[in-house]
Image (cartoon, rainbow, N blue to C red; front, side, top):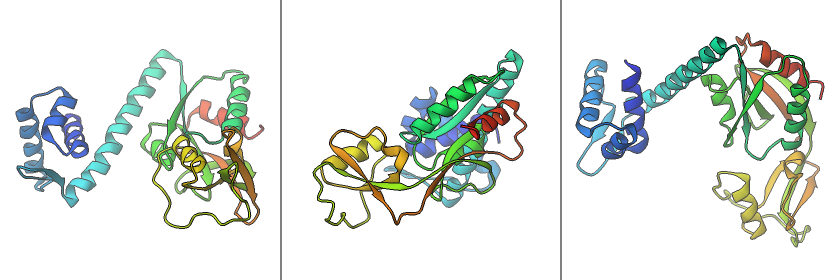
Length: 254
């Protein structure tokens, strides 16, 4: 398989529409269709079920989508690191779930910046549970994860902070009352979640540090029977990056 074919396939698999995928790639739709038909012939499998009304991934296509994303991400990471090596200006890509560990992260970054030989740190703000994927794919060199919620299987870790959890509630919430039950609401970030909490549509239990900069119409109440949360730095065991090692060593002292 060629990288070009993988990029074509990922575009169609994500758009589930050949026209939109072709526009996204900047190529003609017939050329895109021919390229994917050729890929399917060589693999001997059907990746996409096509009809006049829709495009759908097959089971084989779903597997290839996962693998192709990882391959393309690894290739991008290899390009980035090669350019950095040529420029002799290494950088660290640090994956962080948006809205979490803000105070701790600021302290770590400040301490590392003061370290002799410190390099630039690029923050990759992501959604929940994406940090590990970014590290494993090579798009990030290191990530901030939160135990026991995030998995660290296959990664080396350094614990930075262990803290309790708090319930975030509307400012006028009767604390003696019960929290809403059910599967919860679908949100993509803390901004959306805090808006719903302020409207009385949701509650959430978070690490105490995540509630440092709460909106004025919200309150954080300690949840004494919730398990503690440990924030860790995580990286691939095979990493030989000196800047990553320095960052971890400095962070452990903060």
